[in-house]
Length: 121
Image (cartoon, rainbow, N blue to C red; front, side, top):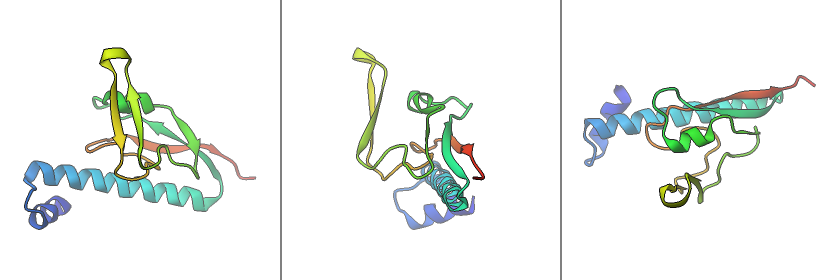
C-alpha cells in the first residue's frame, strides 16, 4: 500500500486502481528478478520453470505454464512476441517492455518461476 500511495502521488495519470496495478506488478518483477539473480549466483541452479498462477490465469500465462529455461536465459527477449490460439481466435502479445527473465508477463500477472534443475556438482 505504501508503494501504491507513492505511485499515485508521483504520477498524475494514476488513480487508485492504476497505482495498485503498477505497485503490485513492479514489486513482483523486482522480487522474481532478484530471486533469479540469486539462483544464478548460487551456481547450483541450472534451470528454472514457469508456474502459472491458479487465480484465473490469462491464455498467455496458461501457455507459459511449465516452460523451463536455463537460469542464464530469458523466457523472452525484448521485442519478441507470444501468440496463443489458432486461426481467428489467435491473440498476440508483444513483449516490448523489456526482457522477460522471469514473471511477470503482463500487468497484474501473478505467475512465478522456481528452480527446476539443481545440481551441487
